[in-house]
Length: 187
Image: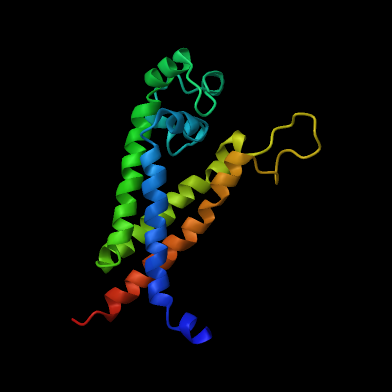
């Protein structure tokens, strides 16, 4: 077993690339559906990196909180608000970028320069996502009278975000592997 593991790193890095692709293709693909687009609004509206993509008249904190739908819920008034806000258009564009990045990651198996770039971009995307731990109030359990709220108590949204630290590390690993392949390629 030790011998197998010691000689399988290259294959495992390829599995890592394929895993990143699956996550990005799936999550990015879901951005085409309204429920996912509506779900990312707290992150986007509070982000200094993304909020400028939305309609400025509708992105203040009180407005997005008033127009949140539960997953699967259809409230026509909220849908109209999200249409005016640019929620869906932003989500479609973001999803396309994420799926495209996932494709680049898997292409890195065959093209080291693409692999290095996609690894760096994956790590960068993860830094933006992890910034939501600072900018988005919904990532922490709210004070509803119980003793466990605020930092370090992650809400469901926060638990989703913190997992991007793994994507950050994975992006660096595939970038490093690709850089090594570029340096070792015969001239």
